[in-house]
Amino acid sequence: PRSMRKRKIHFHEMPPPYYETMTTIIPQPECNDTLPTSPSSEEASRSDHFQCEHSSTTSLNHHDIMTPDPPDDVTNATTHSSTSPPLKSWSLTILIFYTVSGGPFGIEPAILSAGNFYSLLGFIFLPLVWSVPEALVTAELGSAFNSPSGGVVWVEEAFGEGCGFLCGFMSWVSGATDNAIYPVLFLEYVASVLGYKQHNGGEEDESGDVVEFLTKWQRFGFVSLISIALAFVNYRGLDIVGHTSLVVCILSMSPFIIMTIIGASKVVSSRWLQTPNNLFHVGGDDGNSENNTSNSNQNNAANIFPFDDDFYTAPGPLPPITLGKIFWRPFLNNMFWNLNSFDSAASFAPECSNHKTSYPRGIFIGLLMTVLCYLLPLLVATGATTSSQSDWRDGHLGAIAMEIGGPLLGGWTIFASGISNLGQFLAEMSSDAYLLMGMAEEGYLPPLLARRSKFGTPAYGILVGTVVVISFGWADFGV
Image (tube, rainbow, N blue to C red; front, top):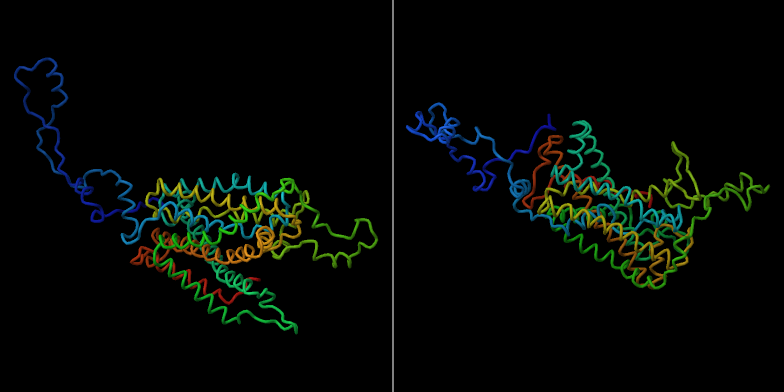
């Protein structure tokens, strides 16, 4: 079975000092047909252990002897192309940061559904409950299996080949379709910076007509160009992806660093303790009023669930639950979305300079960076401003930055939101492409997908991911 198969290391791929020792002639212990004529009692006792049939020195080849496992550096050298520089810890850290987070963008629904106090508690304790265990599992199993297929081989080892394939297939579909969002979001942020406040695809002029920022086909063309350009960066090498992501990280996180520094002196700690308001109460001024009719409920419906995303309030098997004035579905969903996907970093383990030291180090630095990049801006944003719970709609962090640091910092924050999507695209495409390559190496997919480019990258995995992203370029994703 596939789970019992081990990665083969051919002798011609090993450095000569290693495999030459395998063909060394191994002599057998020398034995004499006769004992010494007058041995001492000690020598006679010792000679009893060396009596054997007459045999001569025997030459054994490497098929007849058990050979030790190759050293770690030999294993690493044979698992990726010699033209691909190994991934260093800081590059892995940035890739993990963009695979999981990308910055504090998108935390607004958590505050809107639970208020300041419970949101801060969530970003303090949920990493301990979920993110740290997930990072520990990824660091341990990624180092042990050292396969670009990541969680596929873990699940296969535990539950069999069928579950392994299902794990890989669902992970890739989730990542590839999610990656299609980022070029579209980048264009939306560009439109926002240029003054086109999107409203059903454009903005209304004085006559009430909708002015499109880009037509549908123009947007498809720009999404395709962005996707191809970023795919080419992935094709050139994972180390180049790390360098590019580092530049994106500096540009996108700088406004939050500045906002944190400026706003720290304005923080009023009592604002952190604000509990949620009853935003989701249905009815008029009081629950017993005769005016609390069905028509009144319909008129107030827009204020019951003030979310920009209908997913949070869509009907489903479980009704929307409010307990303690917290709207739990959007709160937990947003927290999980912001702190999940450390397991995607398992695909990068074979590409690290040392999968037993630099790989775990990169994971845990990325974990710390992710938590701090959520928690510190949130502490300042909730403590240094008087924003109410209902103000925390999508994009409210830009308004917070403007209130703390002025229009320049606010505009920079919006721009940072846009370019952060590019970093997330790069990291997600790399993870998905290496996942496909690893599944092909394990025999789940055609061998073509296991081929590497001259830069050591999974060229065909990148090509498949790019085709999927471009095919979704016509969609508006509800924005």
